Length: 419
Image 1 (cartoon, rainbow, N blue to C red):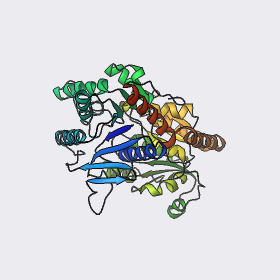
Image 2 (image 1 turned 90 degrees about the vertical axis):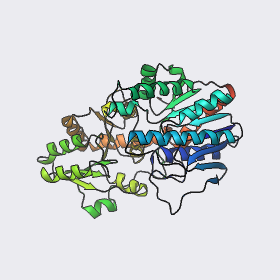
Image 3 (image 1 turned 180 degrees about the vertical axis):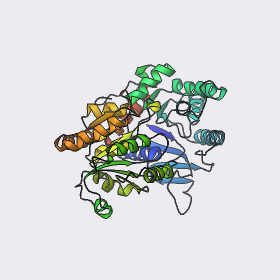
Image 4 (image 1 turned 135 degrees about the vertical axis):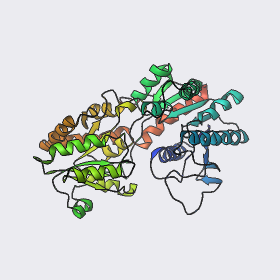
């Protein structure tokens, strides 16, 4: 089975997110299924990883052929510049695809957002089906966050082409059931045409450790530690977390909030901590992925937020890393989100509504006052990773989808436990 993978970022990008996930998936797919031949068409750009020199235009990565194109990065502040850069990469990727040998199936992600256009045109010209894996759905995310007007010509046009890409796929894969439901409701995609391929965590890289970590000792962290580690953006419930810290400061001094990361709200968070004298909040810069195991082990509970406007449009990848650490989570999310469903079904954490800081404070105290229950949730979290959310588990689902598409041009939804 010959598979072409299309995505702007790929190996050696290793800073997390979609390109790292895709690289791990492709690597595991090739290593565990010798019948699969993989060629990747990507760019020479790195998303966050800094290299001493640009990667080569052509590379054989232990049996995976990589062709890299020279194009400007598409992750630009201007939506127009981002779109144009994405279209340029997609056009160049199409011609690169046409120059290769015929494939059995094209595996396309949404980075940059116009790239499924390449797979659709290639399918119409050469009758090669494609699997469309959606991690972030555009323009819907931009509309949900107010960056695009729902009734603008740009939105109507991009929704129309997105619908064509979705319905043109032999099959669509998404990160969670909430996304599957959204595609069915908004894009009229039959449920039988969508499968869930969640993200995962490496149980060897992130594993349970004792809380007496060097990070705790170095920074004098005592008592019950509540951790948020990730992007400090406007859509990550950081205000709700600080509100809960304010509520608990006076009577629960043994609860410490630790916020780790960088982003647009970093300075505003620091200012609020200082202005409101939130002495129970400690803020630290982002750390390398190699240190996340120690950081997570330092916590008693990890907070994983999802803006309620983004329910059905994405699933936080940090969910699975937190579960692998053997710590309970507090999901700040709508009840119908995949994040909330995982927390409840796996019995690995608590769920609180977005914007409800009192509910968040109560959930924190509930876990602090019942360490046995918190420990049991952490054990369930680790068990869920080992039994359902490793790259090996997800690769097998992906292989089944690709094989069905290559053999038949159509496929049945793959079903794992609860997804």
